[in-house]
Image 1 (cartoon, each protein chain N blue to C red):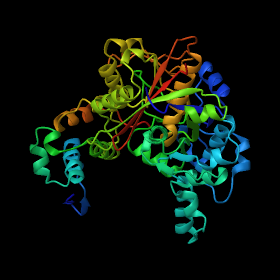
Image 2: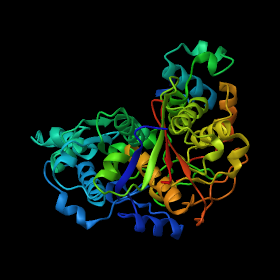
Image 3: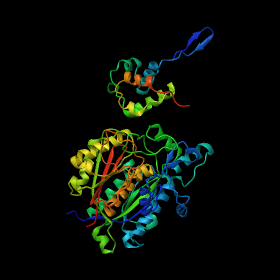
Image 4: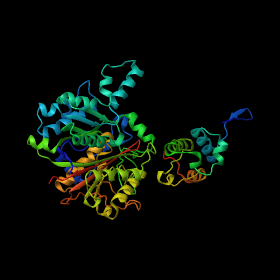
Length: 398
Length: 93
């Protein structure tokens, strides 16, 4: 028996193509990616943009877009959980995954300095990587531990997993946890393109796990959850939506960018052990699935290594095919797909799926969503540059 | 690259793809070109995947070609890379 059990009581999102969970389900049912050609100086690329006029109310000269996205998603999560200003929020922690911080503020500042010899006093508080975390804690009066995890593409999963670990330790009963990223700047796009990791062209799409996969697209956005001990949630009359049951965190210790299937498998194994599950009890995988040549092969090998003969029976959703890669927020997006799977039996598809690749022979749910699948436990993977791996297990309540 | 006097004009001779390859690799890896030419494998030169990307992007610019990433994954030596260069299409436009 895991003690105390950690449950999700609220969630919020601002991701390309969706600002609510019903929006997200509609997007996944449509089978149409939300990535679009980017504008103006970024027009050589496609990406995942947030188009939500309600964010204007949160914009402020001290807030980079990444803080605005974080405040919007965290605010929705807190409201859904029914948390009001007072003791329950005052003792809460805030754990945020964020890879790059205020990237557009940094870029603007560098241009201002070199072109106009000007520096703005707000640049530091806009651009620091822990700014979204600080903005949430200030906005909601959260005086518990506030920490930012900058672990590239696994940042959000580490933030959620570490929050779960904190709550299980008994040191804090409630954490606002998730991730955010706002990477759509000319510098960042050029940097990712220079590594030959971006799908090329303004009409490019993300095509995970098929032969035509040709790299990722960057996306912006944010996903947050309210995590609580089950006892704390029930004591204030909140409804547990799902149990966060397992967390694996392992490092490749081998290469800055090359994936390591052995360590990915160990990470998944650690998450299963933490959830006290056998591989056969898992019914769904929300994949990292970046659509790079090497990454999808490595993740497939890791899944096969852990699940063995059960692997072909697992539906695997790669939601980056819809939104692009939200980097520091990516693990949060993937966890939403796990939440849909265990709560409603809805399985998000992997869109833009073309020709199967002989090296990739599992069930990637090509192009069409599925309903009514009996899924008690979902595995959610996130693997980051630098070799950081995080896997979460989300379980149905009851 | 040394320039040569032809009549009254100082010219840079056109390099073969092979010469460009070894020059680019030697520069990226900070090694003598002779060492690079003698190497039997990429592993022997300690070329990792990020260095390989840098090498390939420079080769694409210098030679005006596009190198296929999927075929690049199979390359284990510089002669194999040279063979890939020689069958790679010219850049569009």
